[in-house]
Length: 146
Image 1 (spheres, rainbow, N blue to C red):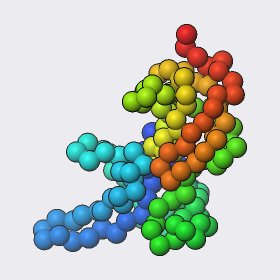
Image 2: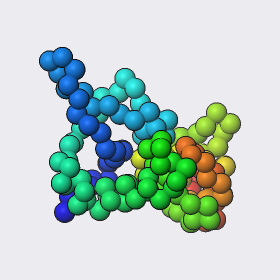
Image 3: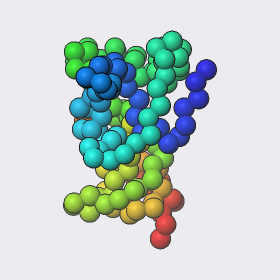
Image 4: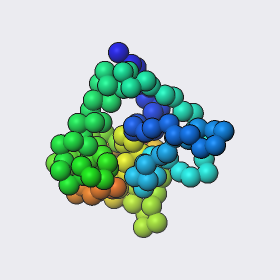
């Protein structure tokens, strides 16, 4: 079984293509749109063989997320990693333009938390889920730093 480190920002499948005298791995546009990665930044890249990727629980979960939502089948965009009504512990990383807390969960998916402050670790309920962002309310704010 393949171990996946907590620091993993994103996981996707891609082909290695030939481009003259170099090889290229294309990163899906959705990974940038979800905030998992940013153009111009440097990342450590690990490659799993197709056999390893198929047997990896994380890869199976990733593949099943894409296959179970017919609306996303043609786009290859994975299902958001949160569901409406889900209770989660998050850590507020920064503040948005309107002063709301911003937390990131799997694949860099953004969760907006009103009144959150950087460093807070509240328990939230996911209220609304969109393709690239979810909105949550605090159900237990004991993780506040203040």
